[in-house]
Length: 253
Image (cartoon, rainbow, N blue to C red; front, side):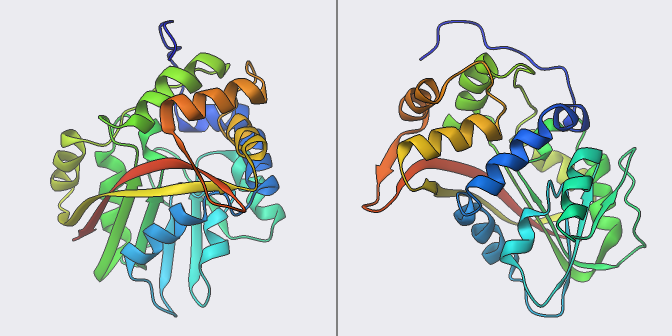
């Protein structure tokens, strides 16, 4: 473990990914199935069926599109970089600002948010917008790093040490439950999702994480050591996986 004080980032989501969104996208292009378990876990929790309108926010480079078919998928982003990368892949991603979505009321059957909201300090405005665009009987799924988790320690201690932008966040916990309630949402599911990020070998897995988190101050070997020390790994025969975890809230209006 690192003894040094973790680097603290004062940047918000848009600023962070304008700086390192292309590295993040490079990781997702090089190992596109690394986070399959993450996306599929949320899809299962959301109970998505064909014909639904699904909104993904923030959508990054529209990575959810690999895991959903026979639905209308709308991505929302504040990062121009991510929006351009998604458009280049012929994916439908709209830019928004000031926590206001460019969508009409009651237009979505499902609203998903995976691992982006820890870069947002005040989540209540986002949750209010999610509720506004949700159809009656629709469902919101938000999944992100928990404040008391080993993943948070990896991000703020290890990633923060080797990423030029640092890493800190406003993670899921009791305050998130309060913000969801304040937005008029009813929490119907509240659980931890445990799963693996996978690659063909440790070198590929470490390189994926180095690019994804913008750890330009570390080499692949250093990142591999950090993964072992903070997260732990599992040998899967033809693959290797690192332990990962998000906290997931399922909500209705």
